[in-house]
Every structure is written in C-alpha cells, then in structure tokens.
Length: 271
Image (cartoon, rainbow, N blue to C red; front, side, top):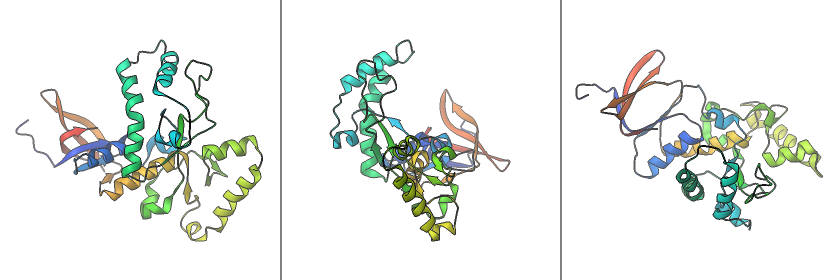
C-alpha cells in the first residue's frame, strides 16, 4: 500500500446523495472533517429519497413536543418490541435509534436549513399494538423553494409524479390527504396550488415544475442547500467501482467518471 499512488485525497468520501449520504456529509463537516467529497452514479441529486414521500419516523422529536404531543421513549420502545417481533434487529440498534433520532433532528435544525413538520394525523402503521400512537411520530419535510438552490435546482430529482398535481405542482402529504379524500375546503387548497403555480411567471420561464417543492424532493433540497453552503463538492455521474483496503481497513476507493478511473484516498472514512 505504501507504493500506491492516489489521484487525490479527501478526509471523507460519501457515496450517494440521498438523505443518508447528504446528512453524513454535513455532519462530518460540522464535526471537523472539512475536506468532504460526495459522489453519485446518477445525473441527479437525491436518489430514492427525493422521489419518495420523504416521511421519517422519529418519536419524541422537538417538533412533536412543540405542538404538545404526548409521547415517551418507553412507549416507542414498547411499540417497537411488538412491531419488530420475529425480526433480527439487535436491541442496541433500537435503543440507539430511539435515543439519537431526536438529537439528529435537533442537530440539523440548529445548524442547517433542514426543517420537518410533525404529522398529527399520521398513525403508526400497527396502530393497535401496545405503545402505538395515532400521530406526531411521523414527520415530513417542510416545503422548500427550489430557487434557493440557484442554478443547481436543475440537478435535483423531483418527488414521484403521483405526488404532483397534474405532474407539475408539488403537494405535501397533508395536502394530499385533503385533496384525495376531498375533505372540507379541498377545492380551496387545489385552487391555491394552481393559482400560485400559474402566477409564478418568472419561474415558468425556467421550468414547468413548480418552484415550491414538497415531500422527498423538499427534504433532499434542504440537505443539498446545506451541502452547498459549506462548499462541499457533489460530483454526479461518478461511480464507485471498488473500495481500496489496507490490512482490512478501508483507506479509499476506485471511482469512474466518463470512462476514466481514479483512486481517491479517504484519510478518515468512506461512507
């Protein structure tokens, strides 16, 4: 390994631009690793995180506490005990998830543009199990204006077309419920979405997709902005070929872009 020549060196190499990858990039930067590189084999940022509904399940977040939701980690622990019965999930991972999930959200809220909204009427999937709650454990990304990304908004993968009115206008999970079930006032919600879209002439000159993002693409866009604010490079259409190890320890990776391969040293980690 001492004779291996590197084409370049970074502290941390992050593979993938979904929620996990972008969060890892931002957190490593915030905790001292300033030389971070993010790559993705696709030509868009976001992966399946962006095309998804963007919802996350984190009990006892500061978002739920701010709206007065009654919950506890003990109740969440009981719910997972029954809902994960028969699954091979180490208890220490369950404990770590419940303890650190709220801390992660607080960390991102305090240091980045990442924002979520607690879903009052989104119940736990197995709502009859002990410890289950009928709301405020699931959250969705707060809507985000794509224009905040500057010209890089064109790099973003959008939420699935089923979560866009006419395939063009993004709507949140809350708005989706109102529209699909036609709850009282649904037509006002639809009219507002269409009106905001039609009257946003400057944005219509740039793209047919609404400026206001929601669901998965809003969550990824907020993380993408946090990455851009820190000057962390994101290289698209760059594929991980293989990890490079030394004595069982990963020390870098072989990458490929435009048919050209390069060895990238990662002095601290490959994620």
